[in-house]
Length: 206
Image (cartoon, rainbow, N blue to C red; front, side, top):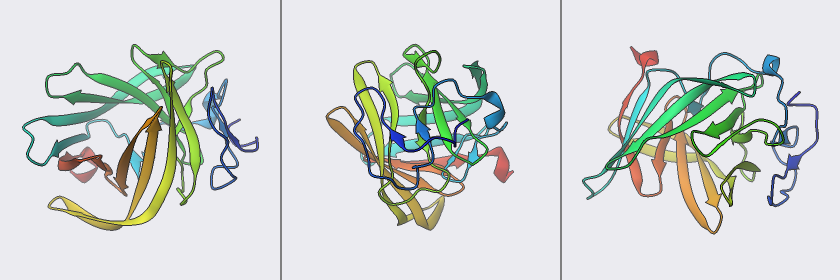
């Protein structure tokens, strides 16, 4: 079960974080029970609904990043939703996610790099109710451990495709580097580093 263990903000080489909004979760969760998960990933800040498409661009750059949601494979007994990320001139990256009954989104793997299973459990991608100060292990990508820290939950975000005053901002630390990612409720990630969302289409809006 995902919600029966005390705070385990500890994976391979992960630092311990003080108890916050994720202190009811075991992270990573080894041998997750399929019945603990729901069919759709519809967390407001991290929706992965098949057919959704996000396009990001950095101001002044001709390059863009396109992310498309689709059904994913079954990983460690759990059906997943898949995000395929394609940057201009680069090979696609495919990540797998699943949502538990409480609304937390778990990262189950990346094609060609790692998958949850055996002694490797899924990491947390987005809490059901992010709180400032939440810190958690997300994954180990090769020799690099990935962690997230919620630094804001009421950030104003405004663009031609929408606006909100309640965006969640997460600092994602990969080894010695960090990216700041911003998530708008109902849309998902709207900014990663210097790249901002310039186009968004979803079957939920049709």
